Amino acid sequence: MENILGRSLADSIAAKQDFYRDHRQQLFLLVDWVIDCFRAGNKLMICGNGGSAADAQHLAAEFVNRFLINRAPLPALALTTDTSILTSVGNDFSYDDIFAKQVEALGKKGDILLGISTSGNSSNVVRAFDAAKKIGVRTVILTGGSGGRLAGEAELVLSVPSAKTPHIQETHLWIEHMLCWLVDERLFGSLQNVNVPQ
Image (cartoon, rainbow, N blue to C red; front, side, top):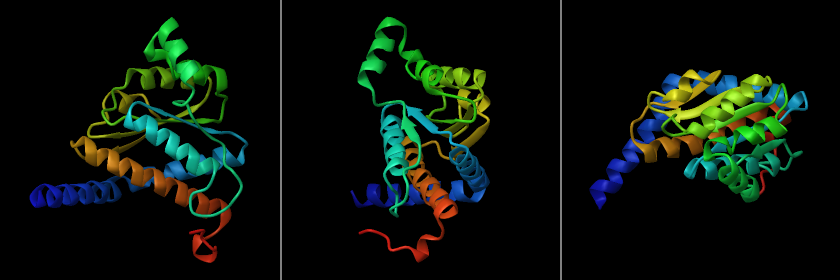
């Protein structure tokens, strides 16, 4: 158990360090995009499957409620939460359409669609990107390894350079938290000068 725990910890840290070393500029660009989106009165839509669906909901909650400071709610929406929409589209059409139909219904030019896919091959995220591009919604993929199909579909790719799914997912959560933190810093001032709730 000690060996497994130690190796897992080292690999998880390495995945974050490798992302920081090779891909932090893409994260900084996403921060710029999200700030411009929010300032223009647009929204961030987020989607993914399984653990990535949970990440989508987590990230949306951090923006709508708060991350580290009390501030105005920010417009983020997880497309993974409405079970009636998800099951009706899956039943009447296809599971591949569950996010695309929501993008068509709710998206508008200037919005951002952030897809989260460890493999980069989620068909329903691919279709959502297709729908987004048709209406002028910017597309971003948070993925791992080579980025799969979605690396060729997205305008902006944030890929964790690891082949190990758990460490890609752990790094995704760190990236999501850093996105919230950096957006808050830029929109509301340095968190060092704010009384952070405990």
